[in-house]
Length: 479
Image (spheres, rainbow, N blue to C red):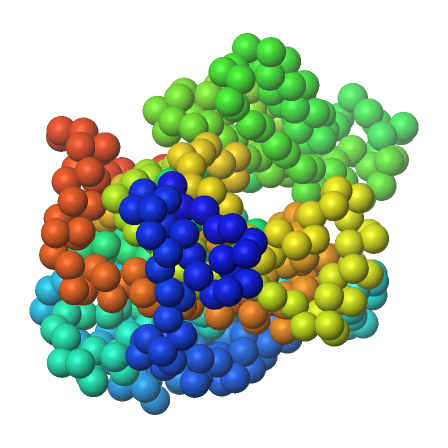
């Protein structure tokens, strides 16, 4: 475990508990200097993508910005991979090891916010980076570019491969890249995510599967000829009722959520079409699939009982994250070496004002700290999970939001559009770059990570995507 004392942090030192010796947080490190020198470029890139706020599979400008910069920096860029126009792979170097870095860039629908510490929706804009993927993409590219420059200067062999991965939010973009075999020759993958605190844990997540259940009935005048109608909305409600009864009879780790996306247009018209959108989650993919079959049975029963017909369109499916402690401990050591975020007086004032809207406790100051290392069960889901089952994978989180901020909130959009967000992004770029360099220079570390990975997957493991053989749902945000 690595901890930081407040006194040592003020002095710029870290305490490595396992070794008991203070280690200088060396700002003269050539790789850190490369990241720092290009910080203004990538801060600007992140804020441009924040302003784009493009939804999943529609990130034409955002993806293009990242590709153009990578190409200008000497990467070989292949666009439109895995049948996804906004997905790309950018490579530099040759031979082993191959170090992959993930970069996301999609925004969320239905949430608009200016870069202000009070609620202020932006007129004419209905989407926003409430999960910070603009920072994710720009920060990952910053790390990749600095590594390229360091490799060229030092003559270090190996390959850096940046994966531009669209539509993490409900679109499972990475699953299609995994399914297409784009990670088959990769030795390890690094990623990160915006947060309200700094951590690098061996963290897992929930496996997740979703679908739109589309019910078809017969329309009719609801008062003059009700006997001729068969309500598609009745089918949806019957399904929902049965699924809600299931909640008492599923493992406690299960999460089931739904929204009725279409329910009819007028009360006096029996709706001939209705739709409900479901997410089902569990820690284990096998258990998830068994629960999923019961949800589908409820849909079919609802259709049978109401005289309607149902179609099931699977929208996405993600495996849980497979943690790798060998890699996580190294990432944690590097994050601790880099340190947290220190606000300027202006940023502090912004954070204090925004904190008044959070009602989340006295968390200010946590942006400066590194959370103690732990193995933990996360309750969200991510398509990084599928990557982690085909190649050893490690990630971290950094304080790009005001402490106490929840993801998918207007407060996350607000801070992500300021230097609070980009400062946290720079922490992530530093920690990822240092960890990638360790892997390039230390074959023993990589071999240990691979050995742990193989043991964790078990003998005879064969990857299968939870979303089956469907094509990427390029229009899923158009519904």
